[in-house]
Length: 501
Image (cartoon, rainbow, N blue to C red; front, top):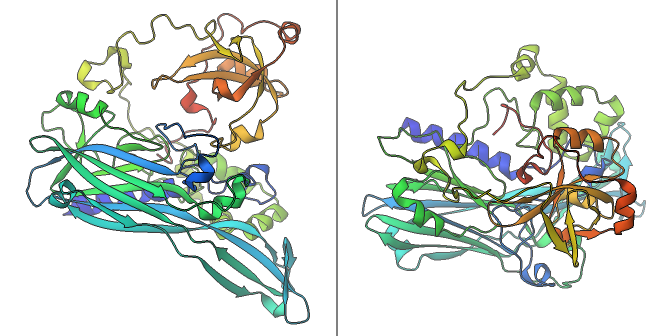
């Protein structure tokens, strides 16, 4: 079937973008601060390390560390021999260590080594893609499903450097994990499918820093599901008659969306499809990698043209460091250096549709997300609402010290740990959680961010109120009439473009 083959290729391309989301960021150099804090999405670590301070709190996406990931979705099966193909995918941490020859037949680890050919070799953290695939019939799924090992073995490979200068050693620790796939009937021809992936290892020292246990982790974990005689129901835009069943699906640290190209509606409200991608980042149904994009830049929300221009402007020394940092970085730099003008011109912008977006409140009930509640924002005032933090009301105008969570904080949060900030607004998210929109005090662009509503977002338990007198010295709440802050879903301040989903 031509559609099926094309759909599989398109879905795999999106899944690969998810797999390497945030793997290495511009300027792609080891010395760059944002490439020193890595592995932020879909990270499944040993349970005893994750829960040292208590159970994890499930969320819709996987930017918080966990020991498991669970996908639940609705499927329709029209045939008795219906089956589901499940692919559990992740990256296995690999440490690349450069070792210099010591002259006595041995080697000693070094951070960098320049060989006689003028090439610099750097120690760095890499990753190896892993995938486990299993096919289960509907009959087997309803009989209790199946549990399979999805881990990866330990390993070491050595690569000699020119002229006997030394070697590069790549070492991986064993990853122990399992996935369970099962289904339960809800109505005639309607079932709830569950895929649960767990890290089954134990950390030798639960108090160890995060970097010490990453070698036992599954990184960028996500799941692909493809049906044979099975139709997946959208959890974002379900048929009206299935909205209640969709609300009963429990997804933890992942966000399932329909894959492939949209199907013809066939006259029924709501979306269904033959494949599903459950990713640790929030995506729309039917995400695509745009045909204009010449290759991955390791950020699925990237603005290809801007990143390409910036990469072109790196100095020769910076490009050399990027090439030495990681093979994928080397491929990015080489691709940019040799990019034909006509390929670059295609990155300048493409209009996909002139159809105006309709606000959720104006959409008919059948087109609204399953979590939508009419009037759900009534009585909420972001600039005046407050939340108690350590017994102190915190809201617009409050000053706080940023204290990101020890576990689950992403790179942006980690960079801001200990900094003081001003709260501009308080937001209630669709899942009932609360976020504080803040600007960092020593950010020279703080006033500009406040003017156009671009903020960092933290939960109440991630901030520490500063003295009331100190807050008074710094001024009052946000100026009336200023633009509303962007939603917390935009918290990482990454650009969007047509070049990627």
